[in-house]
Image 1 (cartoon, helix red, strand yellow):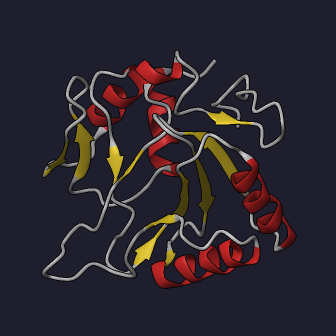
Image 2: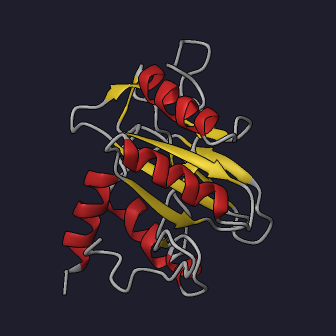
Length: 186
């Protein structure tokens, strides 16, 4: 069993993005907002407990550590097709049931990050290949500029409040869509 501190450290090492700000939303109204605060252990702890949602800004300059494809559909066929196509190119992917209306497919890249425009190009190519061209991709931009300092955030997985309902968890990318029994081992 992992300790809380080791879970937080593991989480921060995988779901990496901009460290000087994050996104969140009001649990009652659902209204999204921007937090100009350092992403620290307390922010991650609150996410894992479900007391304050955490949204990752994936762009760090022109680099990112991951790409996410946001399938806003209850039908898992397209996300599973994406995962199978990515497998063909030896790109590991992970399927998350999102907080509200669909699935996120996560792709993780090099420890030092990769150019966001490359990530976006790879994802777009696979989406075209499976016939799903109008799907939301994170990061949404190739880089941040002085006019746009943050880009767009994506809600992070494993929100403690939603995990209990089977949402924001990673699921097996097959017909069963069963949550992995141990999210931390995954």
